Structure formats: C-alpha cells, structure tokens
Image 1: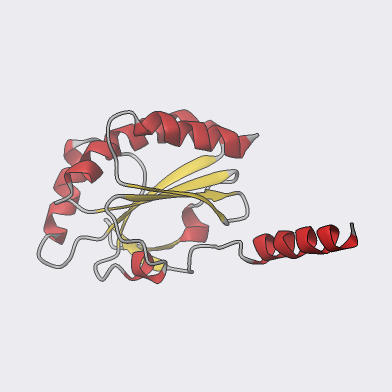
Image 2: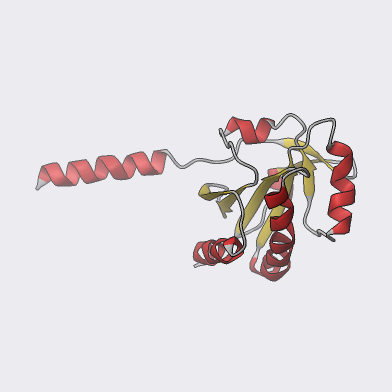
Length: 159
C-alpha cells in the first residue's frame, strides 16, 4: 500500500511541477503600442490565438472567437490574438481585422518567437490559460463546430 501511495504522489508531483505557462512576451499591437500578456490577460482566464492572415482556418475561427470574447468578457475571460504574419504579409493584418470587426486585441509576432518557444506547429493554435496564467488546454486547427468545444473548455475553467 505504501508503494502505491508513493507512486501516486510521485506522479501527482510531476503533474504539479510540469504546469506550463506561456513565455513572457512583449509584442506590438496594431497601434504600435507594446503590450505584455499581463497587460491583456483576463482575471479568470485567457484565450491566446496564434494565427496568420494567409491561414483560412484561422480567419474562419476569428469571428467565433470574437463572439466568445463578447460573451465571456463579463466572466473575466479575455481573448488575445497573436498574428504570426511575416514581413511580407504583415500589411494585411489591419485590413483583415477591420473587415471582420474583431474587437479583441491583436498583437504582432513577426518572427513567431512566442509560438515557437512552445513548439506549437499548427495554425491556428489556441491556448487556454487559467487565472494563474497556466496552460490548461491547447487546441490546434479549426473547423466548424470547434467553437462549441472551445466554449465548453472555457466554461469548465470557470467552474
């Protein structure tokens, strides 16, 4: 019995120690102001969406995330978009955002440093952070219906 308790405590401690957070970042927003995660995160949770203008699933997800942003703001949940468009396509960011009436903050990570620091490989990659800033869920890609799963994960986080 002691062995089982020792083994369980070992695995529990590994889980606690391996809680991962997004690396600190300071990125420029669309108005040229520098922002950090601490500046923009929600009190009860934060959705960070890594996307690019050339990525069709990314562009498809953004109106759904905007809707979630509007619905969950009063619950202390924020959405932050991080565009990983390179120098050649970064001029398209503002027109895309304006055409979709996106209200949540958009930051520019031209070299994809924040995304690459976590070995995220897919566009879009959505990261759900809890109130302490720890990564509680990662979702790669986007297809119709994924917004329901995303909202469900946010609601779980709020419980």
